[in-house]
Amino acid sequence: MEVQSVSTTPFDDQRPGTSGLRKKVRVLRQRHYLENFVQSVFDSIGDFRGRTLVVGGDGRYYNRQAIQTILKMAAANGFGKVLVGQGGILSTPAASCVIRKHQAHGGLILSASHNPGGPDEDFGIKYNIANGGPAPEAVTEKIFSRTRTIDRYLTVAADDVPLDVIGACALGEMQVEVIDPVADYAELMQSLFDFDAIRRLLADGFRMKFDAMHAVTGPYARVIIEGMLGAPQGTVMHGEPKEDFAGGHPDPNLTYAKDLVDIMFGEQAVDFGAASDGDGDRNMILGRNFFVTPSDSLAILAANAEQVPGYRDGIAGIARSMPTSAAADRVAAALGLDCYETPTGWKFFGNLMDAGKVTLCGEESFGTGSDHVREKDGLWAVLFWLNILAVRKQSVATIVREHWQRFGRNYYSRHDYEGVDADAAAAVLQRVRDQFGTLPGQQLAGRTVQHCDDFAYTDPVDGSVSENQGVRILFADGSRIIFRLSGTGTSGATIRLYLESYEPDVQKQGQDAQQALADMIAAADAISGLRELTGRDRPTVIT
Ligand code: G1P
Ligand code: ZN
Image (cartoon, rainbow, N blue to C red):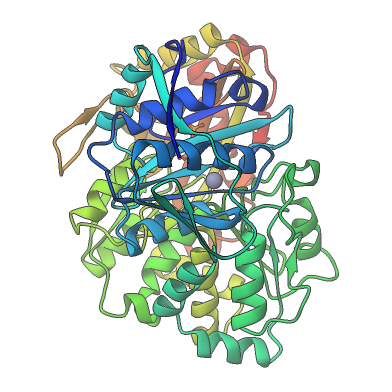
């Protein structure tokens, strides 16, 4: 089979972040666009001749076509083998698992995470390196600069590879192996969690619902939760991956996972509810009539880790993103563990895990994970919770309340102002910055301001410095007000306001979070002029 060199022209594109390229399908479909990006990746990742590449995606619209393009280009560029998930499916954490287990050179993951899918919606592609994690900035910078000079890409003229049947075939000199997308991942989960205990829990009548949101975790949850763990059929909701996620927004939060939320807060509520996003790396945890904030979830997993086989020997440390509540810090302090506060974004955790400094990590934005892979992992978090529930034999709400009793409660909320004028958004943060000199020592919302800054982070492993990662007002009692601009929003600017107040008194831990934070919310507005400057009288989304 002959390698064809197709001449092309550099493409003017936005700088891909570490999360790769995320575009409207119609943009990616332009002539040579995907090919240019893929070739730019192949030209930037070192010598892979004869080595293995992992390919798979969340099953959204354009997944299959993109995979065929990638397979032919991988063959022409000299990869020895491609492992591709059956039907083109691999969740993001499963792709990370497969890369690591098969010692691949890296992998191409096709997904736009929790963004909607379909011909008029989003598609994405990112490259993960041999440790299973997203390519570091040095690599994405190389890829980006290659996109500005690229003048040819390599491909082979060949028929499409059948993706639906497990097995191997040849594509030119390269081997394509269609693998079971679930098997390696399920085996890893089984090595971490006490499946027997969870099976007994479910056999004893404990009932749960898992909402796959018509996205990639459906097949994983069916095999693991309904198959291996024996939960009744129907436990997995919306388990059939659809190219357009059935028109939904596959983001596991209280707004978008509405069907699950309606069940868990209604008369049919079951003991445990959970959901995951488009590509399977986010998670939401619910009890009967009870929402567990992702920040609390991380802290609770850490505090109970020794109940779980994979973490029985202890965890090395915990990392959380800066806006994530400090609940995990209190657990780390009690257990004598190091706790790292990183900027928002998963990439900062990878260095800490590779260096053996942390085992568990998480973000307030429904992302939790550990060093078993190098991505956040939705189903892993669900199984971790199930393992804890099986051991403790208490309800989700009781486990959370007992946690607050022991460590104190970090009341927490995030207010998002989406599609705000970019200048107005910048002005909001600047107004707070302008008061950095005068705020410390003042009383605000009944608390003393201790310190204000723009969060900066020096990576303890490679020494790299990340500045301007959020404007912070820190209080003497551990409460915090944080303003940050989203790095992932698509139209205009998104202001995220994060509010946290610490409550050690058990008698005062039972309030609604918005109520408990009302003074802080008012103070945040007064100081920043948020409503006045943006012309908004309320947030777009409250979590
Ligand atoms: C958001 C979340 C962040 C997460 C990222 C990618 O980024 O806040 O925690 O890592 O999506 O899933 P943001 O839009 O805030 O920059
Ligand atoms: Zn995702």
